[in-house]
Amino acid sequence: MLRAWILPTLLVLSGSAVATGQFLKGSPGTAAALLPAFLALAGVNSPLIFPRSISAQEAQRRSAADGPPIVYWRPGCTYCLRLRIRLGRSARQLHWVDIWRDPAGAVAVRAANDGNETVPTVVLAGRPHTNPDPEWVREQLSPSA
Image 1 (cartoon, one colour):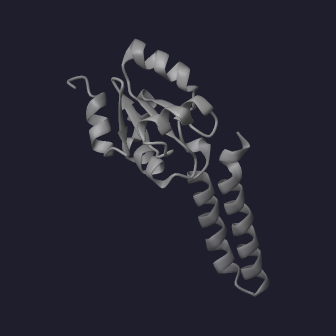
Image 2 (cartoon, rainbow, N blue to C red):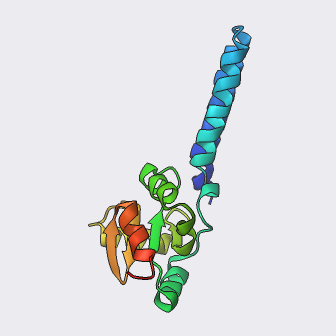
């Protein structure tokens, strides 16, 4: 669980150090611009932007019952972030599994990707799709699909 917060924490600490350095050099304007930028990067790379993760077992159960795909992801992954942002509100319909928090999710991803933990891996109707186009994922969520 703590592993997911390493990158955001490093970004906050780095941003604070850089902003402090700029402020002490006499550039408060630069410091005021850099700190929010680092904080925004930390927020975007934190687990807070993603829907609440569930276990792989629970995701498989729910997906079998109601049909939406399972998305295996991990914090700090730019491709996962791209998928999450481009899906917008429809991301809530998916079942999200953080492979850093759920070892069974990591096993499922490795099984689908020749032993690699390549994310995002979207599982739809039992078939894995590695780093799919967000538009394609959105189309799978539409009622006509």
